[in-house]
Image (cartoon, rainbow, N blue to C red; front, side, top):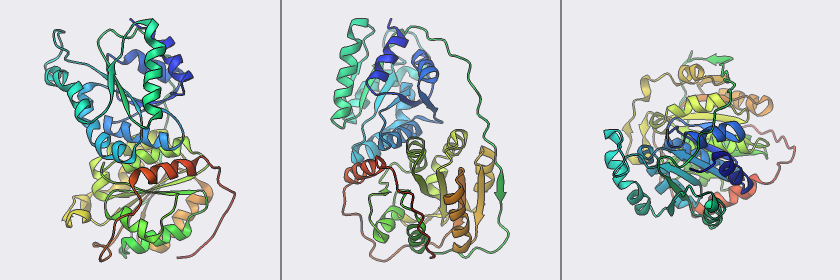
Length: 387
C-alpha cells in the first residue's frame, strides 16, 4: 500500500494543490489528505467536479478530480464536450470498483468491466496507479508531463492502493441568505442580445463574463469579442460550476456567470455547492426564456420554478428577482461595488438575432487567452456606463 500523505505531498510539490470531487471508499485516504492539507471543493456530482476543475485551471492552478468509476459516467459530458474542445487538462483519479475477481456490490459489475474502455474511447490517457513507494516520483512526473502537454490524464485506482489517512476535524461552513426579493410587478422581458449589450457596457476592467452554451455565447460574441469572455460550447449545465472554479482561484476579478434556465435545471445541485463555498466575487445571472431556444424553442419547466427561493435556501448571500433592465443595472452595480455572492433571475423574450453566426475563434483559443487574461491583476478602474 502507498503512504497517502507522502504521495499527496509529492502531488503538492508538483503543483497539484487544488482538489475537487465526489467521495469513494477506495479514494477515501486521498480525499482525507486533500481536505486536511490542500484546498478541496466537494462537488454534488462528478460532471460538476470536472467543470469546477476546468475553471480552476483557467485561474492558473493545477486541479485534481477524484471520483468513483460509477461517477465517470457523469463526467463523460464535460470530458468530451468541455475539456476536449477547450483543451483543458485536469489530473483525475478514478477508482476501479467492480474489478474482475474482487467481490463488490452488483451496481459496480458492468462499470468495473468498462472503466478503462471508456477512458480509451474518450481519448483520455490513463494508467493504473501502482502502490509501489519507489514509483511515486515516476508516476507523478508522467502525469505532470501529460498535463503540461494540454491533455487530461487519469490514474485508475484499485482497491487497497492507499494507506489510511485520518480525517482531521472539519469546520462546517454556514451559508446564509441575507437578502431576498421576489417578483412583485410585471416582467418587461428584454431581448437576450440587448441584455448582453448592457452587461458589456456595465463591466469594469476586472469583470469576466462566462456565457452558457448555445445562443447566449454566440450573441455575446457578436456584442463584443474580448479576452475576458468565455463562450461555452457543449457541456450544458456546466457554466456555473466552471464559474465557481474561476472565482475561487481569481479573487481579484469579478466573475459573472450568464446561465440559462435549461442549463441551470440540468445541474441544480450546483446552487448548493456555489453557496456553500460562497465566493464574494461571483454573480450568478439566470436569463430565463422558459425554452431551449438553441434547439428550436421547446419549452423548459422553468415557468413554475422559484429559482430565487431555491438560491436563497441554498445560501446565496443575495438573491433577487429582476423585472427589467433598470433593476438589473441597480443590482449589478451594487454587486460590483460591494461584492457578495449574488443570484439574479430575469425573464427574457424568446428568440434570437436573425442570421446569428458562431464565434470565429476556436474554443481552445478562447480558453487560453482567458487563462492569460486572468494572470494579470486588473487595474483599479471603475468605468460607469448607462445602457
